[in-house]
Length: 129
Image 1: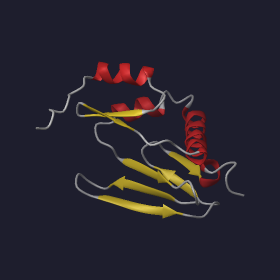
Image 2 (image 1 turned 90 degrees about the horizontal axis):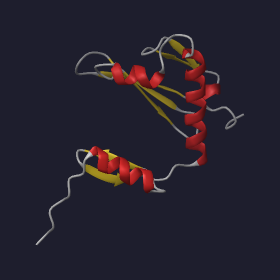
Image 3 (image 1 turned 90 degrees about the vertical axis):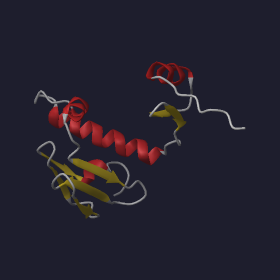
């Protein structure tokens, strides 16, 4: 006989996360251990965050706050860490998305959710020449 799956609360998740050396994800009452990240992944995240933070500093728009208040997600970026490749997915309407892929380090990604141009050189700073 199988044991019933425990359903965790958000407070349970925060308590686990506070004491753990491993990052977890909370989804529909379950807690999952997340895979570790690489140095390249962390560097890419830091580069994008630093660029957006600087660009949005005096606009009254913090990237995280803006994301939480948008009723529906409009734009998603998938950034490769082993090669120069950024895939941008943009919502076209309620049911469809369009994607574009940039692989040239000299390219600039025009963001639409926040009117900003993000050079791939900034995403991959200190990673690729």
